[in-house]
Image 1 (tube, rainbow, N blue to C red):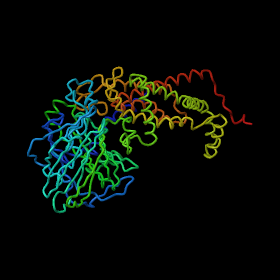
Image 2: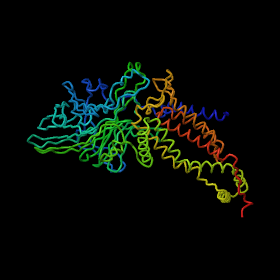
Image 3: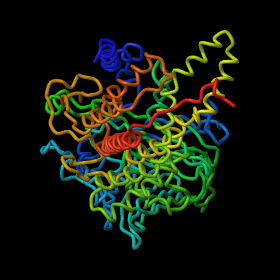
Amino acid sequence: MDRKGIAFIAACIAGMLGLKYGLDLIWPTPPPGSRPVAAAVSGTNLPNSAAATNPLPGTAIGPSAAASTSAVAGSTPVASPAPFVNVTPSFQSAEATEVLENDSVRVTFTSHGGGVRLVELKKYPSSVNCLDKDDPNRGLLAALNRFAPTPALTLGAGPLTGDGEFRLSRTPAGLRAEKSLPGGLVVFQDYSLSNAYFLNTTVTVENRGAAPLSLPGHDYVVASATPMDRHDKAEVQGAYWYNGSKAEQIAAPWFLNSTFGCFGSNPRTEFVGGSSNVVWAAVHNQFFSLIATPDQSPAGVRVRDVALPRPSAAELNADPGLNPAQHAFVTSFTYPATVLPPGGRLVRQHAVYAGPKEYRLLKDSENDIALVMDFTGITGICAKLLLSMLNALHGLIPSYGWSIVVLTVLIKLAFWPLTNASTKSMKRMAALQPQMNEIKEKYKNDPAKVNQKTMEFMRENRINPMAGCLPLLLTFPVFIGFFFMLRTAIELRGESFLWCCDLSRPDTVFVIPGLGFLPVIGTPGVGLTLNLMPVLYLASAWWLSSLTPPSPQMDPTQQKIMKYMPVFFGFMFYSYSAGLTLYWTTQNLMSILQTKITKAGEKGEKVVPVLPARRK
């Protein structure tokens, strides 16, 4: 490697290592207190824990205000409902819980707010940590709404719930949470499990008094998007809402509100959207989602960014791998104020899905709830097709790792004729480059003539200038589709392959303590993880770049960049899942094989140019 190459690699590494510190100077992390912080909760790790008494955030208690608006694609901006008032009730009695369950879920209900404390998924463990045998989450089930600052599927706290103490009772269909309020107002919610991951709720507000009652504008809390565990960096976590034609995701980037994705920011804490056109709203993390579909459209949807309690100094000392700044995205339907006459009833029903983000389960459901998978556009079409093919192959091959390898090989074979023609065209162009340079020199004072003569020369010598770009344009959607598909494919969670014990996570074989401060390749509080698959990717990418000649039209600087680009991507992919790096490594190995076969077939073949003097 020459000095320029070494300097380029050093500059890339220095840039990546300095990126975090540079952004901290330009765009400092908001200090504690700049966002709403949920009160500390004890016992939230434990299912059915009586100690899990999260205070309930308040709901809107006044009429709708036109103080702010939020533009939403596909809908008309509407006035924001009354601001969310944080009302923390002081519960006078111990929390009572009841459980409904079937073969797929265990749903824990709480008397504090009359909502869902936790939805545990019986078929999925909370943790598949391969290295840490003492992981505190080992043995727990994966759950939705864990660590949440408020129960799910509830009216929260405020005038419609009083002190928040509900009475739980069994019904023939399931469970009822009921609350009597002054003036003859009675609020109750009936819950019943449907099948698998589906449940139904019916909220009833009834005026049993003799006078009309004014119901204030209020929110119905769907759920909170929360991390899967206290170590989760929550890179794939957020909320969705669907207006019947388009699903919009609200996640950390929206709340950070940064310029160009990096510089300068004006953080936001609340999203408000919709104009009586909300079909459903959802919360999700990397692999699981809760989706609520109301029988009648609410006025809008609200998502709040709430900072969860930070680990104490003692907890961080005992477990440095804890995420020190986790957040929850509390998602609610918003409803306007109304008047309930004597004997009047207000009834709202919701169909709820609470389970894995598994396309096979969601694709046939009503109201396009599969959009929570984020499979949209041409790359989404590719992702759905690739996932279907991957699952079909897994039906024949009892290993998702080998299924990824076989699928990659099949895709490479499908594009083989196209890439082979592209390789031959590029080689022919490289061989004829001296004659093309002569044309440029001969007509250097007449650019139009240069273009005309160059195109004539390329046409006569059967050179297609687009041949090198066409394979990239056609394969790029597949490449991106593979990325989105493997990034959130719950099918890979906990699946082993060779030394990888979980294809949905980096294939860390061991950790070097004390080097967690290194950006990109280090894990703060843990150390420098040795991930073997990205190393194999880097080796295969470097080998492929050495076999592939650079385009003759590329200047020397660009050639250097392309030559050492694998090093940059090797660092970028270092913390990606083993399933993704397995795909990219297999792709490189197949490209190497194709390059060698192509070169062997062209051995001894000479390109004889059709020179201008020989033209008829």
